[in-house]
Image (cartoon, rainbow, N blue to C red; front, side, top):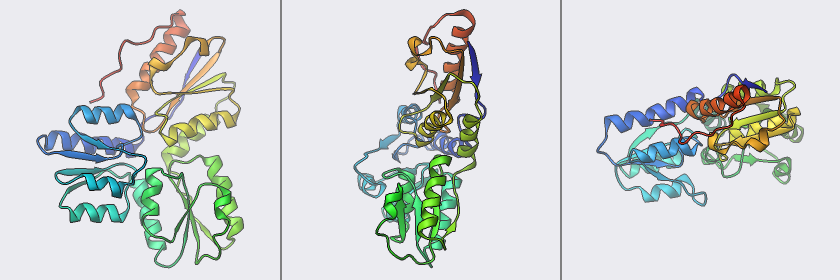
Length: 300
């Protein structure tokens, strides 16, 4: 059995920046109440580490960030790496909250692009419904139209100076198809692809895998970029693609008979979790011993 450690994988710079922002708050203002609107990044392990340090996490799939803000009356509020709408920012300021903005720079760039374009025209935004990044962009203006599938173009009618852009963590394959559908519906539209570089190169690394029997993606099931890696593995022709959160979820029966196993991880997955998975697999490959760890590593 051969274990292939896919490179690059794991944390991107936007995630590193967001987590370091949280660490700074923990150390610099330890007595101040801190509330986080949603998951700092889409990884429960990271979120739990934040909660263990006393940060209050507000996350409800039935509520927008604007609605969640109603539950924060004082102290520090952290905006996650996925960004928030202008309305959330203004509401937090009006409530007198201390704002800590951990928005990924790539997401912020998309916000700036959309905000500027909405002054003169409409935006076709390719994204996932109810995803916090999409929520933040859609909140910029009613001129932003969410396109999750080609059918969403039906009934939009004439648009003024349309621009086509997208959520930063989408699949290269799916986004290309939707870009083409948008362009077919609005031939004069300007296309500005915004899949971030970290997402792109991680997906391309999976696409380049050859003669692999199994792809293991380490990531949270709520992480869009982790799910996309699994889906791209399947689209590339890898018969067995498995998404796991940590080494505890490895199953010997799923690995039996596999000659070449590749391991990658989403851009919001801690290196410590992926390293533990690789340790288990490498021991299994070299010594034939399948032994799961007794505990997960401490993050911060």
